Length: 138
Image (cartoon, rainbow, N blue to C red):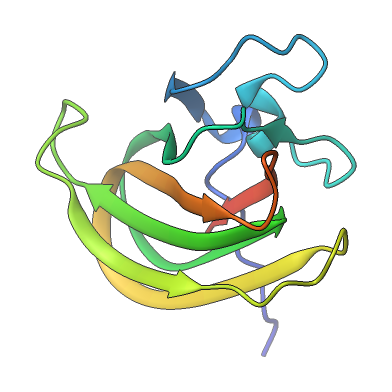
């Protein structure tokens, strides 16, 4: 039997886009970097918390897993919405990440839902500036 790799739904190639970011004024680290498929780029929060990023998937689609790559994030929460508009979000998880200094924090969570929008909330950080390098949805 041939196993096919699951495709990341949160990429521009899959039709995804960032529809809301609470801070987006840094041209070097724009919100789109969180879903560009390159872990070397990132969206950077400004010194205030919480910060939110809402990703619209290409269409309402069944999801089973989310993986995030971040740095200096302390409190991290994820919610999803299945409607045509980014509202009525339902919680998936809220966690406190370990402090890894400047090293990447990797979080993977399994859940089953039909989602149109994914909201990532950086509730707190270990520094004034935290970064989201990647949001992957499978």
